[in-house]
Every structure is written in C-alpha cells, then in structure tokens.
Amino acid sequence: MANTVGIDVGGTSLRAAVVDPAGRIIDRERVPTPNSAEALEDALAHVVRRLEHRNPVSAVGLAVAGFLDTDRSTVRFAPHLPWRSVNVQKRMQDRLNIPVLLEHDCNSAAWGEYVFGAAVGATNVAMIAIGTGIGGALIFNDELYRGFYGTAPEFGHLQVVPNGRPCACGKLGCFERYCSGTALVDTALELMVSNPDLPTELNRDVTPESELTGRRVVQAARAGDILALRAVDDFAHWLGTGIALVADVFDPELIVIAGGVSSSGDLFIEKARQVYRQHLTGSGYRPFAKIKQAELGDDAGQVGVARLARKLITEEA
Image (cartoon, rainbow, N blue to C red; front, top):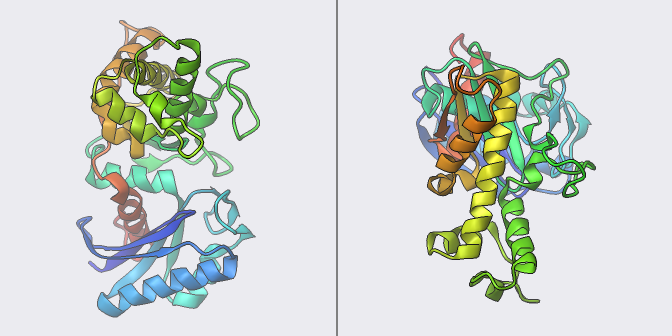
C-alpha cells in the first residue's frame, strides 16, 4: 500500500504530489519549469528527492502535455517543454532508481476523475478539458484509449466551422477556437466590433496597457453584462455542438467537463446540454450521455498519474 508521486509537468511549473492509495494528497512540491531538457530532468529529480525525504514512495508518474510514443516511454514532442524524441522514462528511472511512468496530462486527469472523482462508477467516459485550448481523453470499458499511435484523442482540433478562425495547429475553424478561454475573449472582442451599441463594461478592459481575459468575461457575465452574457452563450453553443460530435463518434455514457473554464460551468453547462441534445444524431430515439463537471480540479492530473504509476508496483490502478 505504498504511496506514489504524481507530477504535472507543465510549461510554467512542475506540480508534484505524494498520493496515498486512497487518492489523498499528503505532501506537495512546486518549482518553475526549466527551459532545457537537462535542467528539467534535474528539477524533476530534485522535487522527487525532496518528497522522498519526507515520505516513502515507490513509483513516480509524470503527466505530460505532449505526444508520447505507443509504450509511453518517449516524449516525441511537447510544445511547451524542451523534450524532443527523448526517452524520459529511462532517463528518470536511471536518476531516481524507482519505477517511472509517463502519461498524457489529459489522460492522467481523466483517470483521476474515473477512480476518485466525477466519473466513479462509469465505464465509458469522454473528458473535454477546457483551458487556453481544449484537451481530451477517452476511457472505454475501464481502460484509457490512446489510439494506435498513442496520440488520441484531439477533440480540440475537430473542425466545427469551415474556413473559420485560424488555429495554431494550422487548420481553420477548430473546436477550441470557439470553445476555450481564448475563444471566449475572441468572441467578446468580435461582439464589441460588430455590436458597438451593445451595453458592456468590457470595453474598459481593452487598452494598450491591458488585455481582456476569459476570467474577466466570466466575471462580467456573472454581473449581468449583456455582451459578456452573449459571449458565454456563444461559448455554450459551441460546447454543445462539440459534445454532440464526440457523442456521435464514441457514444460515451458520461462526458466530464474539466479544465480551468469548467469552474464556471454553472454559466454554460445547461445551455450546452440543450444544444448537445438538439444536435445529437437520432436525438429522441437514443439515451443521452450524462454531462458532469470535474470534481478534482487542478489536482486531477497529479492524482491520476500517481494512481497509474501504482500499476508499476501492484496490479491496482
């Protein structure tokens, strides 16, 4: 019943936690993410050793925002991390002398919700993680689904608007360009331009010295700002549309809405649920998936990957 370490390897910081078998975080460390591969591995080893000094641990899980190979030992590419085709698992095991597991960050969060959070009891789950962009994860028949080459799913880059807003991936009209924290800001700015007479306080936020943020749009919507409410309504429409696409392909029993934007779900989930039901193929003649907000918040990735790392030392995962 040993504890394991889960580390969310983000572009800004490394958030590490010691997690017990019941999914409880009993110790934490957080350090900035270095810019070079060697410094990053030094930092990971440093935080693990600090945690090991205070707690006995038997394995380490790394939740990585990037593409992993099929056996999840090598980071092929991570846009905000310095690793390029690096066998991170071997390097870190050599440094730490304990088993190390790598997993995609959204898969890690989904597993945390599946074992300890909003998806407990479900067997077929889709997670849509909404932040700056959109991440996704799938659990089919109690197993993470990663695709043949290990990179599934990319919900955020499903095209929902032909010739729509340009996306950093190189395509036009991607789901995340209409349903994300960034998209919420873009929609609000577009509404300001196309509806100059629409009452709003948000135009005060758009100055050479400051930029509008998704958090600010949400705050304004909660305060009853008409333009902000329209932007959130548009966001909800595209979320419902995206959920319907995912449900048409995968037919999950449960869809979990996660990520930073999900904390404001009371503003948009009910509208998204209605749009999903309208757009789902065969609506009215088939069961609808349940839609729930994630429960573990920012800890989901650490808890999930720590739990997955337990599989390296026990059959329990």
